[in-house]
Length: 238
Image (cartoon, rainbow, N blue to C red; front, side, top):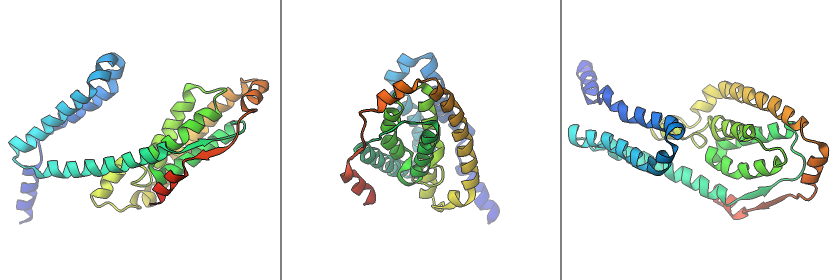
């Protein structure tokens, strides 16, 4: 009986060649913006849909099995509902901060964003914190500020809960415990975060030292604290 079940399970698996559409899409995402940016900007949705239809056609017309497609559609709708709601709610909140963004303050800010990403998602945390991040560093903003924000808040930070990381949410939909990653991987998360924040602090300290104090004082002289979008916070709570 076990041998029969194993044989049936292997027979139901698609051939290795069906990985090609996914691999092609990943290569396009990585390479097309570099080598054919204009084409990719205008035709990315068409390419993605065409490659998706290849896989859908295999299950529909070769396997004659619609269940994987229905299951994938259910996961996609659930995933988009989560990410879309976090995007909309966070996008309606506007925070302005006051004061000089020293390297220590910036590092602590990224740490808060990394922790917060596990509660409101990397999408929600990025939408909420990117505007004050740019505003508080406006007198010396550089590319590495944005890159490290993406690394810490938009990616690594939310890797402990299904809310924070989209692949973990898909695993949660398939029955993985909500707190499994938090229980088993928090040490790796903390190490990766410490390395990123340490590297950022070094880069930011060098950047901070190059800006005259007179410029920093002038940029922060007329700033003030405010928080707009309290109604959206109620949306999170509900």
